[in-house]
Length: 585
Image 1 (cartoon, rainbow, N blue to C red):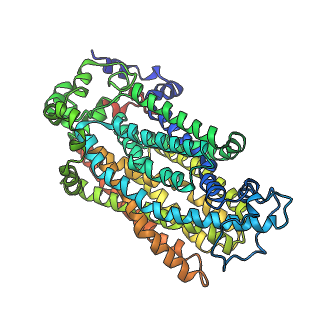
Image 2 (cartoon, rainbow, N blue to C red; image 1 turned 180 degrees about the horizontal axis):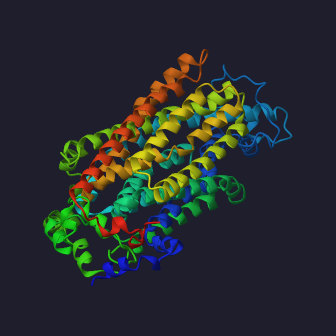
């Protein structure tokens, strides 16, 4: 009798908490992502303040106390409302202003002048570097997804962004050590462009999504993506308030050195702890020899639905079962033919034009159960999510300042409130709705899209803070839409195509920024004097589109499930017995 059968004959031996404890073996990605993201989160204030401080002291030559006051005007009791610099063209410090102290006459005016000059200089650099920084991840993702699938190299897609992030902090560290010598432009350009050359966070998330999909059975992916989503929100929510204190007590040099150290730790973790996983869905002959039950199911689903036991599949730090190991260690024919060549000509393999052609063909591949149509609709639905998010970004605070008479502190409090609600909403959706209530992925997407549509109406017509906060409460499930799209998509495509699919999602982000940002700017500029909440109603169109897409997915998946139930009188062991699944909670 097989070990899997023995486990299923004793379903009562694992209680809820034992399953949660054993599920930890899937949580391989989180430590890496913690150090990778925390390096930037802990340095958030330092990174924002650095170019302004540099521009003030090095480029514009103001005194140290003057530049310090530009970063914290409330501490120095400086108010710039009384000063007008519309006709000022030269913001460089005069000889007298280069030696100003807090006791100097005209200190407040000089601080405001220095702030305006530093802001203009930094904004000019930001505008120039943004297109350059956006193009590199777009180019890399065109090749990275197909390359990762073809050669099974997802770890490399995690390592490369870490190298870029480490080089960025190294450049900032050098600029901080030689603060009075190196101008602002060096740090400002390297901060954005160097990580972008190595793919940045977009490439890292593509690799993470693909890795999690492969290492997690299909029925548990919504829960797995939810855990990662909550983890990502939590570390940013916790880390951002601390970043101000860290910068205040550590300064630039130690802060950037700490960021470099965090990335080195993450790099060591990826190299030595995370193991490369291989798809289990091919070849079909080997799959059929493992289980007679498996052969009755669809080739794209059978292995994940049957062999999800942590003790049976060789994931990181998990015991092996010989047959499962044999399948996992099978080498793709591409790898056999090009293994020696790729070691020498890996750049040629990476930038293979056929990989781009694969992207063009990928959504058009015919798939069972309307899979091709669903995948195209999911890509379109993802655009309908990230597009409005990109377009709304610049106008949230402007709308609240204008319509609700908020200030910076008011908006900061709301941002913290909405982040906490998003964390709670993701937890409720992925644990209570998905795992306990057994809601399907498409149904979670419907719930998220409906609540998002409701929130946009409340935001648009908000005349007071209570209504606006009510919109924030309605928007607490906002993260579930993207999670549902990823999990539904991962169940449609072959496991060897996961990186390609997530790369397409990643490519959508810089493209929609180019399209949606000018549209939202035009809408807000045209309606700011009449109805400033119009841009929220424009987002409503895309929220409704998401609802329709998820309803269609729900109908298709439900009809497929009913036809499968009618076609067979027996169900898989793992589908009927939750205690036979390590990840079923």
